[in-house]
Length: 76
Image (cartoon, rainbow, N blue to C red; front, side):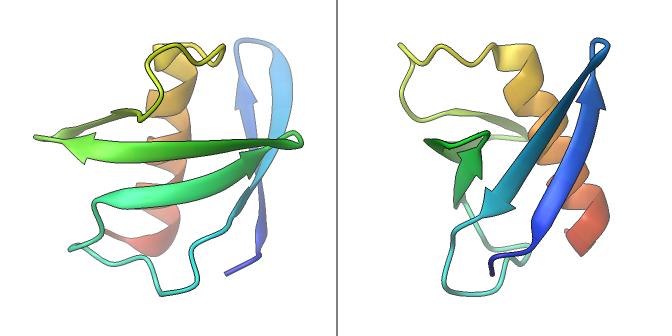
């Protein structure tokens, strides 16, 4: 998709880009993003989203905020 999205979270600005080649829809369960130059994959687990790499340096609350921004942007 390539669109640059921005997020203000805990008094910091983050920019991220969705790397998925196919459109993000309600059926999407895995989203590849580029967060401030770092590749990250988030997966849907039930009703919440989490990082695929559990040892990721990205806090779970930030992953959740990114997923929420994507959900609101693409109405999924």
